[in-house]
Every structure is written in structure tokens, then in C-alpha cells.
Image (cartoon, rainbow, N blue to C red; front, side, top):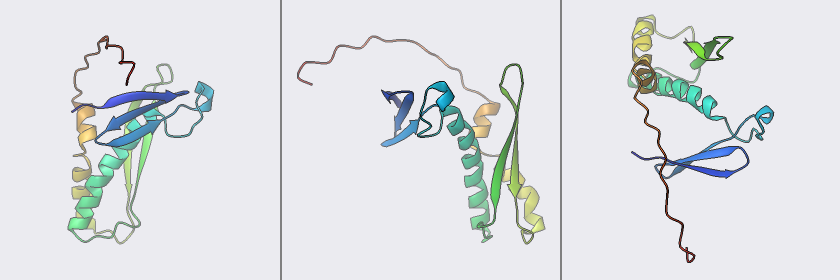
Amino acid sequence: MDMKIVFPGGKKVNAIYKGLTIRTDQPKDSGGQISTPAPFDLFLASIGTCTGIYVLLFCQARHIPTERLKIILHTERNRETRMITKIVIEIQLPPEFPEKYRQPLIRVAGKCSVKKHLENPPLFDIYTKTIEKPNAKE
């Protein structure tokens, strides 16, 4: 699985993956234009949307309406390191949501693969590679 990262200009950095372009930018105070989410915003969004697909599929399998469901991510940060120390996932349910499905919904939401990767992080290997100069004809 390869993902290509490109630099289209300014503070923008894009990822090209599976034929899609995932665009990022930086906040204005970091020299960006805020034209798209920052990479860290997408990181947090990936946790929420991953949880969301598990919640959605759970509800759809049981014919439970999802129009009024919401997932809110709350984060806590260490003031010194500015690192997130805790992520709380709040699944907001309407009053008519079946009580018997509340705990199973929490269990299924916890199966999010992004969350599981954070709990069991991969190793990172970063290196450089010199590429050939492009031909003048290209």
C-alpha cells in the first residue's frame, strides 16, 4: 500500500491514494490559508469517522434510524507538550434509541481500526532516497 505525498504550493501538502487526492493546509498563524483541514485535523477526523462507520453499520443492521445520532470527540491535552493525552468519544443518542443496544453500540464503536492502530502503533521507518533527474522530454 503506497501513498504519494505532493507539495502543490504554499503550506499545502496533499496525499494521493487510491485515485483520490486528500488535501491539507495549515492555519493562517502557521502561514497557511485554511483552505482545507490541517493534517492533524484529519487525524482526529479519521478517529471520529472510523467510529462513525461502525456505529452506522450497527444501526443499519438493526433498522435503527441514524438521522439524530451524533458522535462528538472531546480531546484533552498536556499543556506543556501540547500532546493529546485523552480522547473521549461521545455517542449522542435520541431518547427513543433502544436501551438494549446502548452497551453493544459502545462495544462496536470501540472496534474502529484507527483506534486499534493507536492502541497498537506501527513502527515508523523514515529514510531518504535520491531520485533521477527527469528527462528533458518529460
